Length: 500
Image 1 (cartoon, one colour):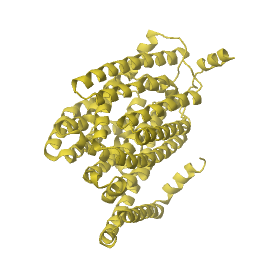
Image 2: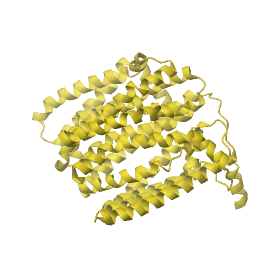
Image 3: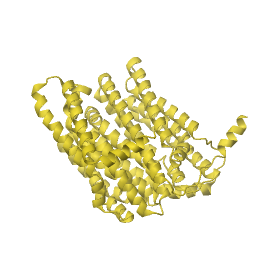
Image 4: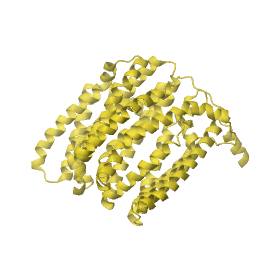
């Protein structure tokens, strides 16, 4: 009975795609992913409040330094097998099994290297903590690789409702485990890592439950080379993207200290979680959609404009709102010792809003078989990023680092963005028009909140009361202006939410 069940799952093959119904699948997938991002952000906010009062800024600095290294090593474990599974229109049993074994072998090797380097680094730095944290983080590589092909198949089949539930379950268990390990057992930064590992174990089990596929012993070097030939560009793109995205943390942690890095990490925490998480889920939704439309670039451009419009409507007010209420937000949520993060937090919110524009670029290029385009422009920007980041940190500290980060999305919009617009026959005016509802309503919200702050700053002494009033005024003004001036967009969003 068990053998039959295993063979049945090993024989599973995804259905072929013809591109029909992609628009509805993207809308449904985006909404489910968006709800997961919203719920995860709320939970992350609660988590940050709790751990900010238990741990010190230096603890988060140590975890950030260890994560920089492990994420760098993890890049070499991504040879694009998962992306290749999503991209190719037809797949065989040997394709899936070969990609799975490729992931497991490479990720296990990378995890072993991380463990060795982590232990040596601890002895070299005369502080074993970072080395031990690196070793523990490396264990996740093997865990995640076990379910990687199942996850790719779920993306390919637009199973975004199940993926959203899996990711949220991961975050909930990770948070509960970390709270127990840190708050009850007092394991400090080790407890945070333990929570992450526990959450990833659950996520791996759940993807095997929802996607009925198991690997076999089939393996072919010819098939492996075919998938690497497509996915090889992902290694280059991920490597340069990692370097550009983590240059600030490396320079802040080296040129300043781990305490300043802890402040910087917390300032970026919620804005980057929103924009990065959105980028990940949006790319996961759009990549299979763009792959299905790879021969219909005009329809692809129309889909891109819609993605910009509705993601901006949902995300812009959150980031703009956090930036507006930052002083009272930090004071109430984290306490007085975290007040140095207020100005960096505001700039990170602006960075997140700019990143909305570049989030779909990578999925689009990968979906139409041109993964080399992001690689070209990120490589060209790297030396500029190093110079800007070094000068920013040297003269303005953490604030200079976040200001230097703002140049990356602007550069990508004016370079890679132009190439994409030419490919999809879109004009910049069409994209700017698509974000007009969110921008205009955010302006109304900002005016309302700033006028409210002028009144309550002297009239109310309780920070928590001021924060609640600002949130209420901001949310009310944004929603009312959206209903009054862009009723059709509200009706569209509600119509997509109703079946759920």
